Length: 112
Image (cartoon, rainbow, N blue to C red; front, side, top):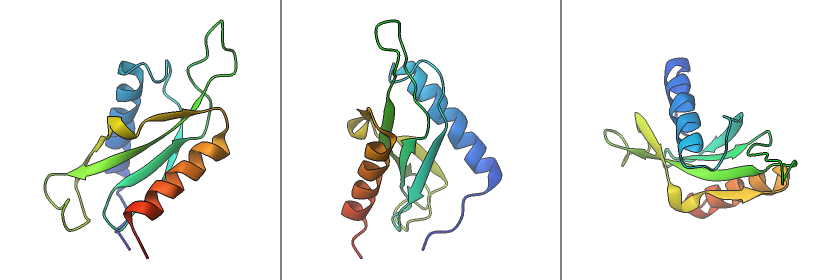
């Protein structure tokens, strides 16, 4: 099992993720999110609140994606830095669908 991420690292990751989600247009405001951390060190994330509401679409969307480790420690499963993988970004109408996809990606990339 991977080591727990420190509070400072979690804050840095959250700030980067929120900035990235706003810049890519996936969401207009920074939503809260949760994640599963795999043995490979990657974080399999989903948002826990709707985002990206517009006048035409009041409901908004949930998102699921992977935050991949890179740089020092990434090959051993203990990365010190992460970046979002744009290829894995998906929007969902239901939070449980976003969470289920994050779990599915985790299981796919980290076989038992």
